[in-house]
Length: 279
Ligand code: NDP
Image 1 (cartoon, rainbow, N blue to C red):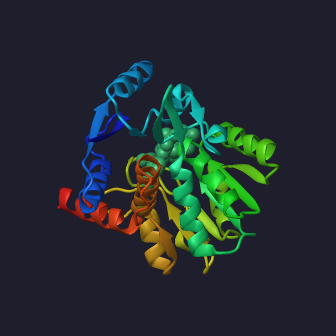
Image 2 (tube, protein in one colour):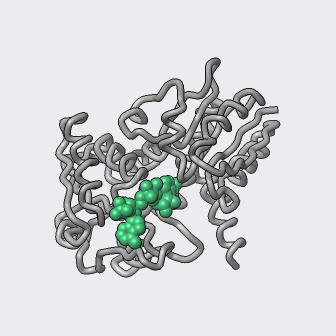
Image 3 (tube, rainbow, N blue to C red):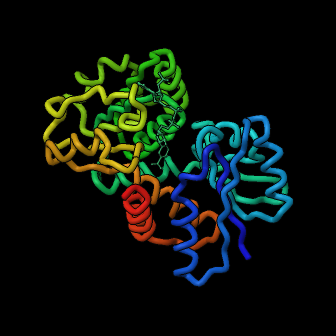
């Protein structure tokens, strides 16, 4: 039997077990996907060693341990080293190799919608997922990325990291500047938990967006997010958080099993579950 799992805190709300077990059962694979709630960052290393000893083949990592898991990986693949955070671990002889499929998910979704590079992008937020998003946008051919964040110093740190490492044009601005920047931007990405936290508001109005803008939202919840409402009000294309979630899951599944599966069936499972759980 193939053992897979998810570590994080909390993990009980996660759609990952359902997406992976449905996919495995469709393919006739003998696979179990378990969730492991890890109480503190200090216990991440110990948990990873225990799961390796128990024979787990792969793991997902969710908030708040993506950075901690990267520190414990014996190897980091591709851009995950620069991002400094991993959401997937694959078993290797001497421990775990870390990958970032949040990056791959956003990169693929943007490439599919936009096709050509040379666009300008705005990212709201400068936390862990924003790093993966900026790398994904640069990989998709963005020629300039603006990072707007409540804590300006964090945006600046992120911008400097990518400017140094990629030689890319990544510019930090305070969150209040997002509205002006959006007017000149083709791709607008949200990583701020707007709609989930009462205190977090999306700093944009529908009039701030270009007619051909592509919106990308990492945040998802039971009800349409503020980005979803913006997209609907202007008839704009949207990559929502469930699509990103399903795409990263399909990439995780491939890394663990070698099997390429369509993210759309995982997306359908996740959308069905989220509707049922909250109806
Ligand atoms: P972090 O905690 O690392 O970053 C959160 C960001 O949101 C920071 O930039 C923070 O700003 C900002 N923020 C938080 N509260 C407020 C507020 N009240 N007002 C303005 N800004 C605020 O989280 P992540 O980047 O890891 O994740 C962000 C979201 O994306 C989460 O909801 C997560 O679940 C989701 N996500 C979804 C994925 C998917 O597959 N769909 C994949 C990865 C993440 P500051 O720096 O000032 O604190």
